[in-house]
Length: 264
Image (cartoon, rainbow, N blue to C red; front, side):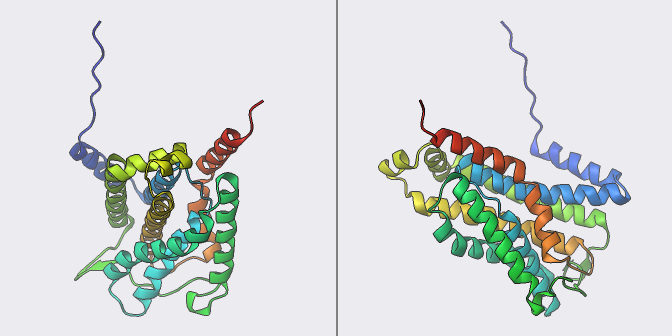
């Protein structure tokens, strides 16, 4: 029996396809396309955290806002915008490490609600910081520039967001295909069995949590540069990124709660 052949698109063809879409779109459609790319960056991180490692998070919006404000504050204080874009995922990852050390001792829906509470606390804290613009947001943010070349329109930012998304997808693919990726899948199935096999469960959970936070921070920084000369209030900044991952997070929490329930 002859099986139908599955033709997979090469990376070059996928690149041409995305570039072609960015060239064809105009106005609001192009702006929506940029936002979809940025939401995809956050979603890839959440998929790695939940789908591969089995850890639930409803607080990715906090890391998204952390990356956005880190890049914006550096840019408004005279630092090159490229430095702000590079520093944003590092700052978000450090915040994820600090938060993840106590929170990752929890599991299932307990972890989900703890991360959601963490986001609400961070949102309230940033909203009361004068240096971050409070509930109004930051104003007078310079556009993203590399040397003398400055990004001007939505199409330029679509290319920037696509480059960030491609970097995140390639990194995630390499992590999943590596030995630590297999260890993450093992601890997602059973942390006790993985630990008895020699997998450092606590360290791997913290690393993947920090990596997902770094992805969200990169998306937040890219959002800040694509929003022209202002950064929205933290409540709107966090809400946009976090709602994109709520359905999958809720499904993961529900499945973990069902699997941990006693069988009759």
